[in-house]
Image (cartoon, rainbow, N blue to C red; front, side, top):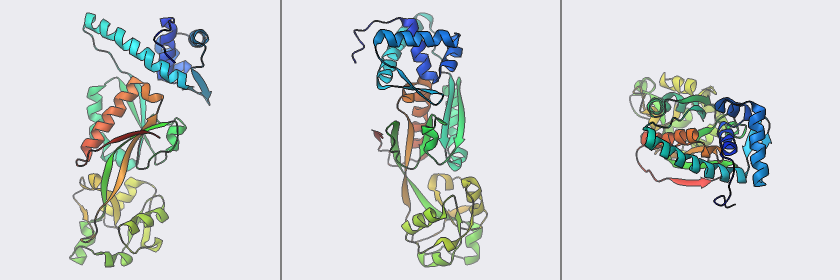
Length: 308
């Protein structure tokens, strides 16, 4: 739809935009200092004036329709233009505030994100970050998170995804594990070694075999669904573990275990909702994480963007 030639009440447009950014009428009403019925009437009046449906209700959330996504971008551009005029006159900066929930594995959250979050605190002090530790993309579809860092390409049509790069991973061992052997290991040693399991041991065996190791689930004597705990067991010499080079490099007590095994690579995806991607605070966090994750794994920085 061509919004350029359509006129509408700015108060209604602002009510719509804040509702789109906050995700619910109650949160938008609080942000604008209005009652929820008043805000609801303004949004309904805008829909009636334009003759389109801007929101669909899913559970307790309001989801932007395609028309709503388009209008949000148009209204935001209008608001930004007005804001720039105001800033030029007042010399004040625009505040970006609100909650953004980021979903990541516990290992990523504990070892890779802290530096990025420290920088983000200075860049956008009004943004509150909540970390949701999970390995599932369902947390995005159920609105448990606004942004997810994942190692698999999403296939849901409502998700927007950006592949940042492919990151290397190897099989690591604690120095204390290798010391009694007096040498690094070779592929031939693998079938006699113990490995630390994570959440899915059958899947782990598949990854280990991708390294060219002849192992089975019988090689996994100890496992834990917590990545942090499983990695701690490996660091303390209880078995071998696959780990991203970026995380292992932070742990001087571990080294690559095999002298004749090359690293494998896994993708790093940053994922959000297409409609949520129009929110300033979510866009700020999304772009900051993308920059930080590219910095965390220096090397091939080729990126690709897609709408899954």
